[in-house]
Length: 138
Image 1 (cartoon, rainbow, N blue to C red):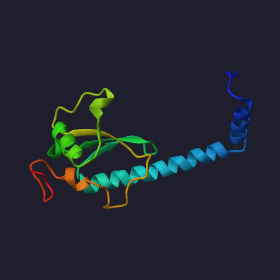
Image 2 (image 1 turned 90 degrees about the horizontal axis):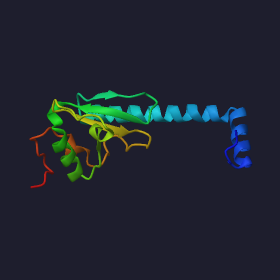
Image 3 (image 1 turned 30 degrees about the vertical axis):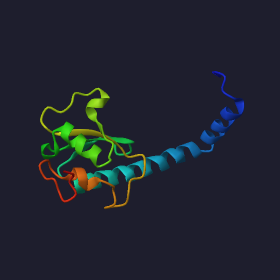
């Protein structure tokens, strides 16, 4: 059924599918997203030990549940904001916020992340609460 899409666009897409290029593109994207997700999970393990991660291995997003020592969520988000890092808590997605003192975040892995050890501001919010660190603001 044609809903008014240009015929040339339809023909190009049909050719893309018939030649198998669409399937190859999907596989290429899934591989790239999986590699980026793996890098994100490794960085979380390095900077936030004990973080539980869920989500599809080839997906664009993960849910990261940081241990209680990094919470409560509001305090963690404030530390991240002061470090110049914008984060989205799981509670913004219609889920109830954690009641156990942990921090639940939705993180995207579709965009390439920084090289190992170069993520800006990571040290500013990876310290457990109560540990101001050398670069803490007064």
